[in-house]
Each structure stands twice: as structure tokens, then as C-alpha cells.
Length: 253
Image 1 (cartoon, rainbow, N blue to C red):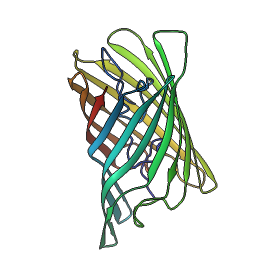
Image 2 (image 1 turned 180 degrees about the vertical axis):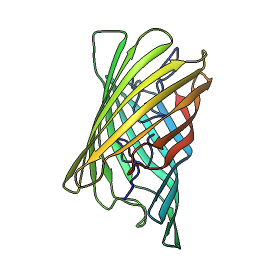
Image 3 (image 1 turned 90 degrees about the horizontal axis):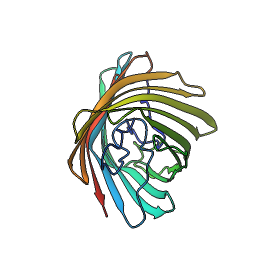
Image 4 (image 1 turned 30 degrees about the horizontal axis):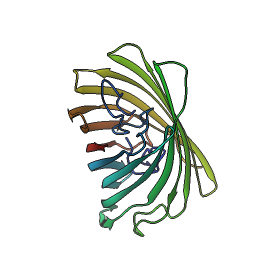
């Protein structure tokens, strides 16, 4: 059975976050990874997938999901931020041996704390994200149990144009432990446009491993507003066929 490759938040797609070049506030969209910066105290950001999507097909069955993922990030000060994330609406259609089914509703709520950690280098960034996902979603869309996650993201600026990143996350749910790793390469195409490529490998106890690869773009249309587009494709049998999305992120001081 194929499965959606998920990020640390447990949302259907938290598909390496584009690098924080220039005056970029450091949004966590798009990509598997997250930014290594946090929102400062007194500020907040809203990141939306409009929508994100995931398509999985295997042995006569298929499933396509279109979640409107939302992530509210609130700066608490001291290099710490609070995050509240959930698919505020999700449309899912599935087919199994010719029988079709549709489901709509909200998804599970994730509460997380993110910390920017010291590295002693201006080129090296490091952030940790810990949280829990509660089974608050609609009956057809919820995971049905709490999920716990702990993620770390590293970024290293090679120069003003190129940077490298690495993301690793541990997930615990229903007595099973899983992990995800994702290296990424980022580049500034112009002053306002950046791109990235990434690979994501997902392992969970009792399930088949899944690997995806892809990339995306992030465009700062204003100093506080970013548009993004991303697409990952499955490169292993049990990975989703495609997942990606279009998003907008807005920073408020």
C-alpha cells in the first residue's frame, strides 16, 4: 500500500523550506524542511496552502487529497515561536475497485514549538521543532490518534546564491516510531525568486519505506508576502505518485 510522505507536523503535505535570502522573513513553506529562523516577538505569520495536494494509486485503488493547509506562527521572543497548524478544509476522493468515495471536512490540529538554536556561525542555521497532533479532524480525515514529532533542520550558506540544508524528524504514533530525512539544495534565482530541489525518505515501523524527490519555487512579491509552488514525485513503489501545492505566506509585524 502506498502512503503519503508526511512532514514532521503530520499534515498531509508540509512538502526543504526555501532559504531565507535577503530580507525574507523565513517562511516554513514550501518544502519538506523548515526555515532555521523563527518569528520575532510581537510578530506573526500565516502560511496557507491554496491548495496542497497528494495523489496515491496502487493496485486498482487511488486517493487524491486537496487540503487547505494553514499554519499560524507566533513569535514568543527568546528565539522561540508557537505554531498552530491544521488543514482548515480538506476534500478527498478515493476509488477502490470501481467504487468511489468522497470526504470533506477539517483535518487534525497540530500544536508545536519551534526554537532557533545557536551555531556560532553566520553561515550555519539550526532550528528544532517539537509538537503534537491531536485527532480533532473529521471522522474520515483524522489519523484517529495523537501523533508526536521532533524535528531538526540545518542550513549552510555556501555564498549569497547557494545553500545546503538537511532535515531529520522523529514521529511517534500509536506505539510506532518513524523517521524522515531530507537533504536539499537551494539557490537564489533573482533578488526575490528562489528555488530548491529535495529528496525525502520516510520510514515507519510496520510500513513500507517511501522516497520522493522534487523541488519548488518561492517568490517574494512584497517584503512580507511570499507565493510558492512545489511538486514532489514518488521514486519508490510505496511513495505517493505526486504531491505538491501552491501557497501564500504573509508576515505581520
